[in-house]
Length: 341
Image (cartoon, rainbow, N blue to C red):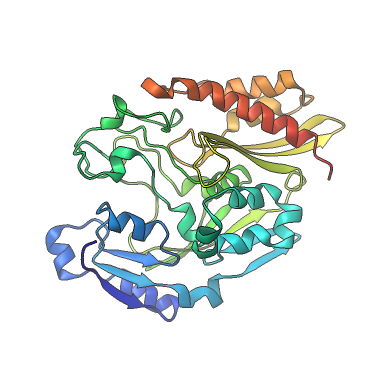
């Protein structure tokens, strides 16, 4: 790990001030992100140890938990502070009862130790597990070193993305919680030097396109402060299904976050998120449109799955993933329809 300076922010204003004052050394070296916020550190410190991320300054924001560490549920929906720990959100009675897809996405992630440490804000910003991104001995990684190429295209890529990829990058987004947020139409609150703004969670992450190294639409120094999930008749009838090589402490090969509003077996409204398969947290509007107004049957679920993966792009070892994704989505939809609420 490279040397860095540690700062402890006592309030949001101080955190923002520290995060927007780059060091002279970083400016001279043209470091893209010289200052990083530190909460749980379960991703950031890991990437610093393997020399993928090289911040000059870490700004500890754990003292902001009083402002941004609450869980609140009311008729309008669910509010989750960015400094809520994953384990606390997963065990909260209102989340378990009214937003089971969110609770399950958190319960199935990482390990108990990591869930006790990791913050929700940090979790949604975790970076890809692509081997070529995380191993600096590989020169060709456009996400880590823009313009260098993408070794994964012709390399070991079984775990990587088939949705939202580009000819510059096929890295997948590895998280779970973010896919549930995308499916349920969440919003994210952001504070920065120019004040507060709210954006749809779907707009937080960027597709790789020509610039895979630019992963989010956050401006320099901006801080995620919380998430809002709107209440709806579909939130209780929701679930998160995760398919992986082993039953615990493993990232998804394919996952589905689904939520349904049914009227006598007919889909009034559907929400569909997909994980393990895409370049960013993925909401499938195509699958949702295919389901609306139809009886929820295996045939209609299959039609939705076909729509969800109609634009999938495969490379080498990822050829099995569209079919795995389709089967995962069909299974999730049928299980969701059978839920007793």
